[in-house]
Length: 358
Image (tube, rainbow, N blue to C red; front, top):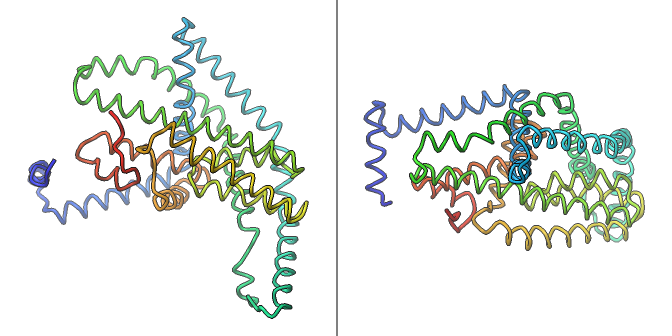
């Protein structure tokens, strides 16, 4: 589509609203600010809802598989709900105590880290390299990553009070998903461009989230085993952190690796910390840089800058859980933009250089 065709599409909108281009841009920006402010104010409702949508998308293939085997919809949904409850219970049993212990031990860990940092700086100073002063020491806080991780885990733990609401929304979404396609085909012609874009959007969203979930789960399991081998405390907790942060490409793997590496340094010494760091590097390089691109395709990527900005933006809007959901939410926007010819250029600007296959 050339620029003249785009202008012809925009002109009716401008004439209908009575605004010129500058006024229309300002109104759009104002609407965007109001929408973001509303999302931030409705954080307590929006976060459980988004998490419910996220879970529903992940388990939809399981629902479809059960229905293809002739299992009634109600029985398939009941099995999925019981499966989700079992996973949640195992997480609470296996990780809950570790999170409590880690949170209570966090001040002691931070103090040890400050002591070790001061010793390292004193060593350099004794060799004639005066690197920092007291002001700079206050800025360099090696325990910041641990505090950030603790805050995110605490924010996710606070969602346990909304477990019933989340499960209820998931159930209704799965019930709706079983009939939604038929409703769409009744409202829109099956061979129309609108239905093609709708099918492409759903297929790409489902494929991205399911593949990302499985690769994140594999990464978390491997990391837990690796940390257990080296004897690092709270190995299951760090595996869970790795699973969640793996939804954030590039940046997430670094954020997930820093706390266990620092803990290995405190607990077992520098050589073990180096071994733990190398394990994280190998796992994330193998899965993040080789396996995921082969499964997803280049069209389902985001630039590192967009990943970082989305992390800050959604973290500010939705809190700690928003940081975990930041990339899936941004990827949803990217796939939606790529589904329309008029907005494909925006999708390209967000990351991938290859158009998503329709």
